[in-house]
Amino acid sequence: MDPDRVAAVDRVPHGGSGDADLVDFSANTNPVRPAGVADVYEAALADATRYADDFAAYRAAAADYVDCDPGDVVPTSGGLAALRLAFGVTVAPGDRVLVPEPSFGEYAREIRLQGGDPVGVAHEDLLAADPEEYAAVVVCTPNNPTGDLVDPDTLRGFLDDCCAANTPLIADEAFLDFTTAPSLAGEPGAIVARSLTKMFGLPGIRAGFAVAVGDLGERLRAASPPWALSTPAAAVGEHCLRQESFVERTRDRVDRERARMREALSAAYDVDPSDAPFLLLDVGDESVDTVIDRAREGGVAIRDARTFSGLDSHVRVAVRRPHENDLLLDALVDR
Image (cartoon, rainbow, N blue to C red; front, side):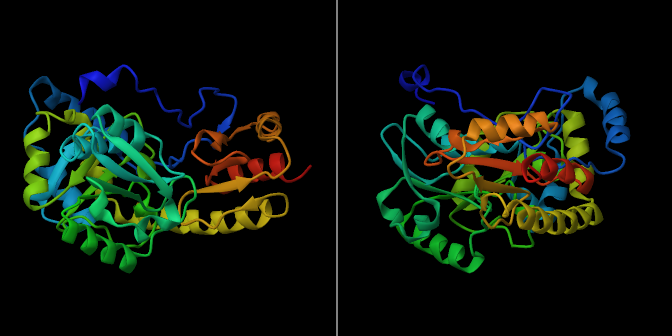
């Protein structure tokens, strides 16, 4: 991290409502959690009186989840910690790093903290860029907040270009498990960042991991702090990553509800296609503040997407359970 840049780097706004009277559609976390999480967490407390081990069971579960070797998994306290680690081993002061826009604002922030300079390009054009011009390239798939999945074959072709240019590709796959697309985990030249926050609905647990092979993997392991996870977080993470039926049921529910919501919301807004557990809405000539206030009056919190680069008339809504989604539709469509 570059000490000369730290003080000048601002915080990034995120979704999430602290109002217990509202159903929160502003954060894209699963409202359902796997059975047994509380029991696993409580059982792990007995082992929390000593330092954590090398997280072998957690790394094995993560490796099975993304189909890679357990030795290439680096546990982290959430997906953002995995991204910070990835930028920390690839970005030096003055480096230019290609990032998609609009997309997750933490990419640019973390790059600046390392002393690098984020260079934004429209997310749909990113894979047409020349990676040789950059110290690293970031891809988010499915992209947040637009929700579109990068074509896996095109992405692998771009990774080949990155390898030829000796430019690491940092792949944020925080929402990839809501699709059946393959991970880049274990592919030479890629650093994959994963989070358990979204699929398993546990943002406060802070469990995630990074995956890389070869020199990039060695750098990640060297830079990773010891005891990167708490013992309960590792135990809960291992448990969740083994819940294949839960993941499949969640995908099916999100697919059905997202299609239903998009059709209903399209009667009032321009709604982007999405492969993720959220939808991006262009409210057109209507005020974004008015739409947000209307949602609150209807008992729901939605995300002001104007905080994303290039969006000035948009909101983002999560895909939740059917009865909750009905509440959102009543607030935003039935006027």
